[in-house]
Image (cartoon, rainbow, N blue to C red; front, top):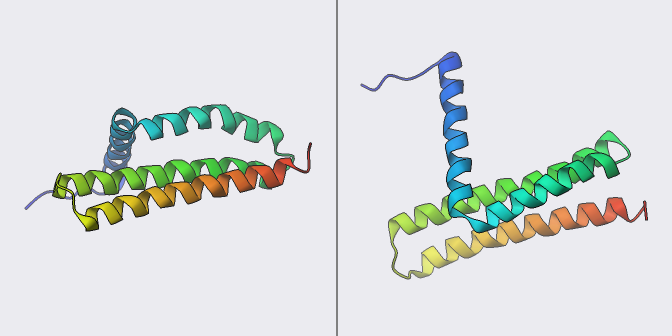
Length: 121
């Protein structure tokens, strides 16, 4: 029977696996790299442009939502590619739905930024 890690060891292992997932996505997904670069630029702007903690939280969390959605989309794509490299309508549907989720997250982030910034300029 495999030993189950508990306590702090489990947390350390989970964090390590999470960083491996981020690294794998960085290496394999150009969109994720572009979104990370956008976050490097816009997260500091979110702190600067948000007048209140709530505005800052909305600006920044909307960007993080894009990254989260991209990570989940990339996971779906990796599993789909593992199942089959051949064209399959269900695999296409899964990939298209993942891409749609990313698009909606980007639209949401854009709406948050426009609504908050329109009061400033």
